[in-house]
Amino acid sequence: MSSISHRDTSPPDPVALRDYQVAALEHVHRAISTGKRRIAFSLPTGTGKGVLIGAVARDVLPRGRVIVVAHLRELIGQLANHCEAWCGQVGVVMAEQDTEDRAVTVASIQTLRETRLNRVLSASPDPIAALIIDEYHHATSRSYQRLIETVTRHSPGVVLIGCSATPFRADNEQLSEVFPHTVFERSIPDMQRAGWLAPMDYQRVVVPMRLADLVLGRSGDGRDYQSGDLALDAMRPAVIHALVEGTAPLLGNRKVLAFAAGVDHARLIADAYNTAGIVSAYVHGGMSPRERADILNRWRAGDIQLVANDSVLVEGFDLPEISALVLARPTASLVRYMQQLGRGTRIADGKDDCLVLEATPGRPDERQVTLGDVDPTIDLPRGGPRHPTLVLLDPRQDARFRFFDLSAFGCYVAPINADASLWLIQDPGEGSGLYHVARCDNDGVRHITADPKPLYVANRIAARYLLNNSDTKLARKHQWWHQQNASDRQMAYIRYRAPSMYRSDLTRGEASNIISLVKFAEAAPAMIDSVWPVLTKRRAGVSNG
Image 1 (cartoon, one colour):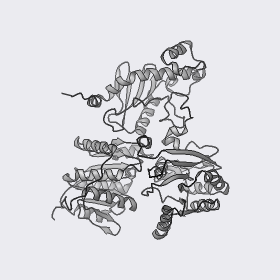
Image 2 (cartoon, rainbow, N blue to C red):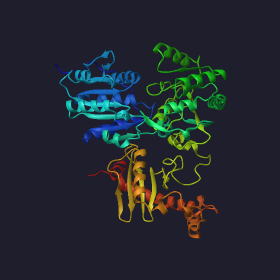
Image 3 (cartoon, rainbow, N blue to C red):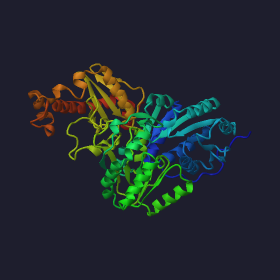
Image 4 (cartoon, one colour):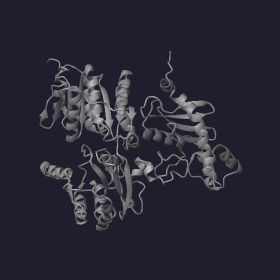
């Protein structure tokens, strides 16, 4: 069988990459060049993940063929378009489509069963240079594991590349075994600050749901409220009434997407908003493609203002003009929450922000994921945090340990005992967005992580380390002595070293936090140089000789 040409057609000029996409591509190439064969990167929904996949595919083509895999029909079409823009002709293997004789193949995981996968692999003697998995948080499933095993046997040198907007799972340790090296990360707040995602306005809407009484079960996105019980609770007339009464006056002329707990719930939501004078419809998986397309086209055209959906308009659906989200389906799954949020964060002409209206019970359930878990600045009082503790890693203020926010230095730090501290330090020179965890004590600085990690992983590692190694009296956030009056020595130190934080009524805990913050800030530059020495020197233009 003849080799597949890697120049089937001359690819069109690709789109210009944004600065963070260039940085991500550099980190992927660097990881591959250093011998890493299982790597991952993360970008929020709406920031060009598909474009980056196309660029990665083009760059690895000289080494062999590329297979790009996703789990939704909508994603397959989008990825094929992006890869074609970068690589020329692209094959698609999905359902009735069966184009296997291309250097780049975009395929659905459902289609790549044994027979068709073998046809793809045997289409050319050229090896598979890269297997790229979109939404790689699904990669721990058996179907993906079989795919990875088969492709690896066929091409032992294949590079496995995962990308996702939501790389979170309850079984995160298992996911890290599939992709042990995350090389790049950006968060929603990162992209909002850079102007690539829309800012969010936010309001909780109190509804008489009974979330605290519901049990969690397994879902495809980890543990979540059991769907049947959640739907029954959400469909009660009092809940629907409170939801619409609390949200309808805020919607104005915004284009609105509502998330429901089931088909019947979506129908009730649409009916209730119609009664309130907001033209609404609902879509669900049981509709014919033509019927669903008709509703979505009328929505795009402005004939419908609000569309409620039951797990249909989540992954793979893009309508940048959506400027309001009604989260009528509470969730305990961070993956599900982030997917819902991503439908409204894209930027669009004439769109100033995205209004997030979140159904929350009057008796809060600590298991419910809320916007504070994603962007904690949303929930801060207008004057900012009252205590200098780390909000980013503790949005609900229920963490066990005292973390301090040194984000101006790219650091977060927690005391271990009187002589030691634990640091989370972001990459200072290469822009990967990743963090090292390190311990600092009288014996020097010691890495806890061998490789840098995404912040949520670094936080887990830090919490586990503190649980096993810290002095409870100093490290735990809530201690009896925190409520005592500050000592004279504490007050004198703060008056001299941090006068802007001085208050005559400081408690001993508040004073301790301020003193720790001052000392950690003084130590931060040396810690960064110690934990990231090569990158710090490179950033400063210092040669290694």
